[in-house]
Length: 343
Image (cartoon, rainbow, N blue to C red):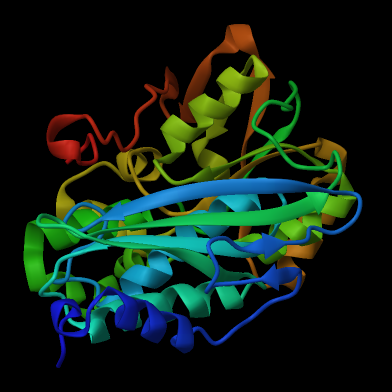
């Protein structure tokens, strides 16, 4: 199996470019020139995001093969697009790879990127490749479009809005903790859903695009760091408070079982560091049922779990024994060992 050093830079780039299965619309000039030329639609705003995945920090060969790691990088970017209600269009992939890396690994990584992006209408149009001596890394820049002036932001929530989440927040963090603490036993069938939430999350682009025209969502953020931390970001941006209600939270037997196995309170997993790539939404109360109907039509779980309050109320959790403040926390790249705070 040839390495990158065996092939040389330009042959590696040629193979990567040839392997890309999609060309996309709005691409006037794609990969092969010094820069891509793209044409956004009339009356649309450009939305741009970027994420870097570093070997050993964001992905680990023990738990994710190359294609899974590439897909997960794409989902991180696609989730940002969903949080803005934007339509993904074009992506640039830059990579730092070791000379002894096999070409098949890099091709598989790009297959994961290509497939995940293509599922949501986006295509790779270029990038860059460089050699590194340490940890390999990949950077994905994703560009999208949204009807002019309609992008969701973190800052629009108002007192009385419903707080809603997609999916099952906390599962990805639980999957990571299980893998860290019990090793290969984390692959057992009973942990399938929490393990999958960590390694192969979903992107909620279709739901966001469908909800956009309802003008029901007042603020949004993707859950890339953890519910407590990302809710704090949304509240700070809007100058509001919030209360999450344990009684309204949907039952999650898989997460509850993981909490018991880990010896961690269930609320800690739900609120703590977890890169679920789900959406946290503030929704006008009179429009929540319409949003729920849309989510059901797309088979996406959507749960109302709290309410936006005035700033003075702070951010809190209402449980069976009373209401307690939520201490904002989430994944911190510069915290201890660059790992989730609860780990």
